[in-house]
Length: 258
Image (cartoon, rainbow, N blue to C red):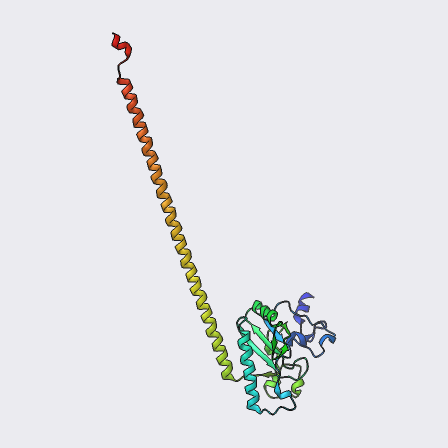
């Protein structure tokens, strides 16, 4: 029974837990959903709800396609560099949906769960473009399951109200540049750590050498002290033997009278 429940957990066959929340980290029913939204206590992924303010959704927007892409690229570069301050970023996904539970949602997957937790804690104290950030740990780790395959193929007929992620992508050149910059930064940090570790090892080696030298000096001092004590004992024994021989050779008073 337990194996069966584990096998259907988070799927459409699971009548207890919400499959949409499990796959996407958001559900159109919200708190009114008849199934449980099991929020993770730890995860590599954080979600910032309604983060990206897409100017295209403004009825008065007059930006053309290139300007809209430039606007998004600036946003993506800004947040990528900010998220990298908390740890190694593996992936960032930005929703292009218009449904309330997905509009502007940004998902960030870190290499380490502790980095995701630190980012969540710190960013919940922050504002962006004058708006407070609402950040939570997300159950989403496999974006392939969360994204709308039909949309990626240009075939989704649900439009922006689809319940699966419709992603907005930065230009390839920008994404490659940001990923290269992160790799370089990580190598530099690793190099500095290696240098620090090497320096620490050298310091420890020098400390051990100094300690060994002090031990050898103490051993030599003890050896010299023991040698001096043996020398004093030898002189003392010789002196006692000399006095003893001197007394044995000295004439007795009774002998003088004879």
